Image (cartoon, rainbow, N blue to C red; front, side):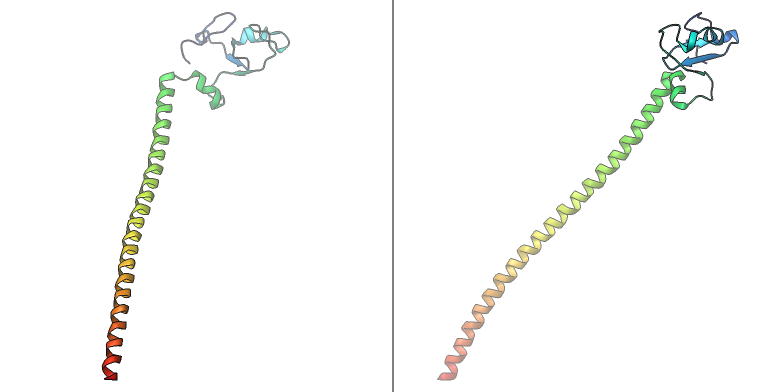
Length: 142
């Protein structure tokens, strides 16, 4: 255990060979002092309390309070980097989608311009065709 852990009542350290417990109100007691708590009341704050033995068997959510903060910072940094990488991948995906849509939009605009040119060419050809038909009709009448 870390060197800051001590009984909040008698200030003994874990090196004394005693078991230490953590109360739900956040106080740490050696086994001797914990046995002196009256009617499950904390000797420090007076609140009703339950306790668990400090050990590697504790729930991980409680164990984290006894870990080296630098290790926890590394873990937090790894979590942050993982989440950041996931966000970056998602953003890249959406950027690529926007780029594709933009590319499709450009392609559709070019096709639309070509279609308009075809319509104009078609209209011109129809007019020329009508003119030529009129000329043919006039030549046949002569």
